Image 1 (tube, rainbow, N blue to C red):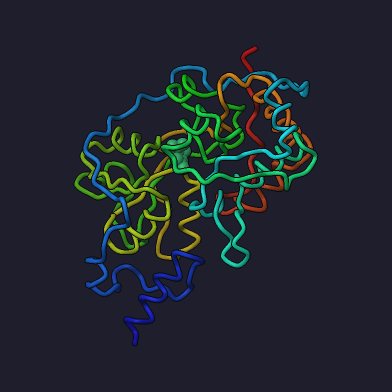
Image 2 (image 1 turned 90 degrees about the vertical axis):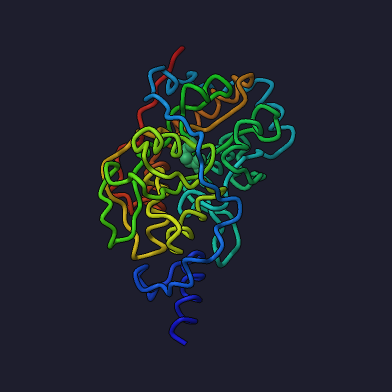
Length: 313
Ligand code: GLU
């Protein structure tokens, strides 16, 4: 009966959290032979990326004058937003209402408020991390709001807004783990999502770690709980969303990399980039940014000032 309760609790934890979850040390041995999350694989060819050297966080100056891209969105009457549904706190399904919700979801709704006069005029398209850039290049979404770090390589392919959140990559480990930082990761299994800055940063700061690459961030939580990963590594905003679901996990170690989040857009849609930057200016100015931080992210600490925008024109 105890084992069944533990199993049920483990499953429930993945969804909504469970105060009586057993510590990993007490999880029955049979759980560690459970199948890996679908699509999980040990990554072998991940090359470390150099720390940012270009000026990719500088964006286009805001303007509310509408051009062809903004006009097309207004004609359609909906903003099509690429987003995730597996990242607790940032963008996830509310377990009661089934609605997409979270910091990124609210940021997208605020952009719709400014472009279309109504935060409800949003159509969400679910994307995995590798799909973010192709969806923008192919024009199947107008904007991507998915905990997306601005990098030089990405900025060659898509346009970014100004920074709307400053995340930092860290480690998430069981509370009884001896891992305290990147120096302790040699030979350890570290979980991260495919095609993310997170995976590349682990490869750079802990080259002797075994990289477990999964399809969704929730899979890292499952892999940790099933004893298939020793640590997970990604942005603190995402790791905090896992930690609040499991009291036996906590964030450790220093910041491994700065992760400035930007809203992604197609490079040719300059008027949309300027309109989105105007919307972010409004959110910083009128207290919306602060109230969204307070609503979702206080688990990271007291609210910082909103990131200061930088412009290049
Ligand atoms: N911020 C990281 C990235 O853009 C990880 C977040 C994610 O991919 O969901 O690659």
